[in-house]
Length: 66
Image 1 (cartoon, helix red, strand yellow):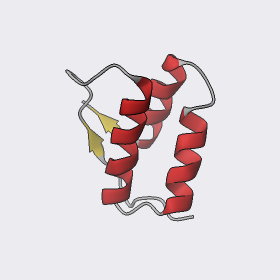
Image 2 (cartoon, one colour):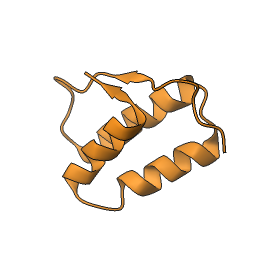
Image 3 (cartoon, one colour):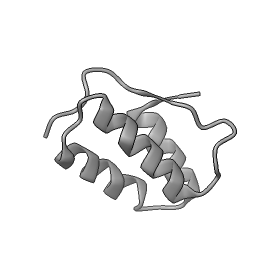
Image 4 (spheres, helix red, strand yellow):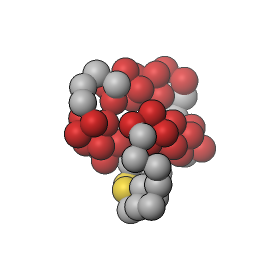
């Protein structure tokens, strides 16, 4: 499993509030930053394992959010 060298930036202000849109946006940012499929799959699993607040916390754990 290969994590990105540094957290990618994800702009969520003004974005659609849909949890799956947010997860997809973060997953694409992680991929562009160099994360491999296994890392992104684990990220998605963690993000989808709870409520909306969990989605936001997981994205903030893996990405710099603005």
